[in-house]
Image 1 (spheres, rainbow, N blue to C red):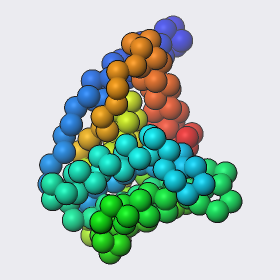
Image 2 (image 1 turned 180 degrees about the vertical axis):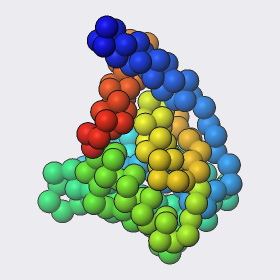
Image 3 (image 1 turned 135 degrees about the vertical axis):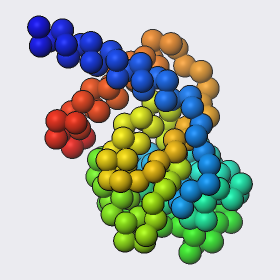
Image 4 (image 1 turned 120 degrees about the vertical axis):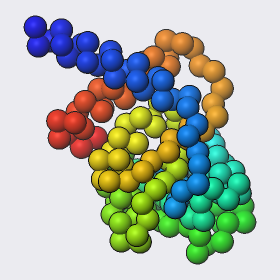
Length: 185
C-alpha cells in the first residue's frame, strides 16, 4: 500500500513539475537568482550560458537591480560556477556591484540555502529564479521554504524528445521527495 501511495505521489509531483517548467512568472523583484551549471575551464557551458543570458535579459528589462550567480567548484580546482557566471555577466556589461556571488553550493539544496541566507542578510525578500524548466519547481520550493517570494523564469530550450522531458521531471520529483524527507540533494 505504501509503495502505491509513493508512486501516485511521485506521479502527481512530476505533473506539477512539468506544469511549472513552461511558466514564466518573471516580474519585479529584489534580485534575479541564476542557478549554476557546469563550467569548462572558466567558460560557461552551453546550459550555464543560456541561464546567464536569460538572467541578463531580465536584468536589462529592469525587473531587478541585482543578480545572484550560484554554484561551487563542481570538481574544478580553479573555477566555480558562480564566479564564471559573475565574470560572464561583467563581460556583458553588468556592473560588478550589481552581482552577488554564491560560489560554494555543491547541490541545489546548498545553493538555495546560501542564497536565502544572503538575501536575508541583505533584507531582500523576493527573487526571480532562473534555471532550466524542469529544475524550477524544486529550487523554487526550497527558496519558498526559507520565506522568500519566488517567481520562476525558465531559460528557453529547444524541444527535446518527450520521453526525455518526462524522465527529467520524474528525476526532479524524486529529488524533491528526498529533500522533503531531509536528504540534501
